[in-house]
Image (cartoon, rainbow, N blue to C red; front, side):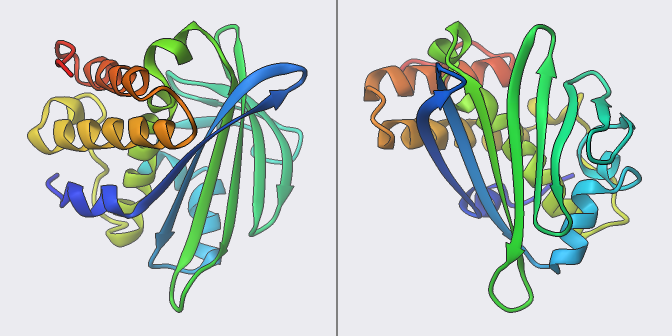
Length: 213
């Protein structure tokens, strides 16, 4: 699937926040994107077990407040809060690591609805090595899949197994990594460290050597 990767990169607002979570230093990546759809449809795409695999990953479990879910080959967790059409919060559990994801849906300008996603994790060696982009790029690919699904619901989603080796996939990942590096600089992260982490994130997702800065 070919797409205008630059327009999708431009569509996302990114920010990084450092905070305290349960008495430990943590970092949050925040993504916000507007979609040409209604709040009802955007909420349904985010929470309907039949639709989620069409833009993200196969999911199993109990998709209700207090229920546990599992994404195939990825994280699982518990649904800790749910306010229909507006707010969803879950734990995000991958191996021994637990972090937290919140999604807010709201009306945007006429004919549009906005998704704001926040993923908070305790600071770690992984954060030091890859920075905010390790999480941010992954979610940004998810938001891309969601946009393509909303725009063309009957079309197949990008192939996760090959997306990172296609020219447009590589360009999207590199652009997203760079943007998250700059968002980190904006949050107060040392510029050299943030941009080096962004290059490592690009290499991680594409499987290529780390570029020189």
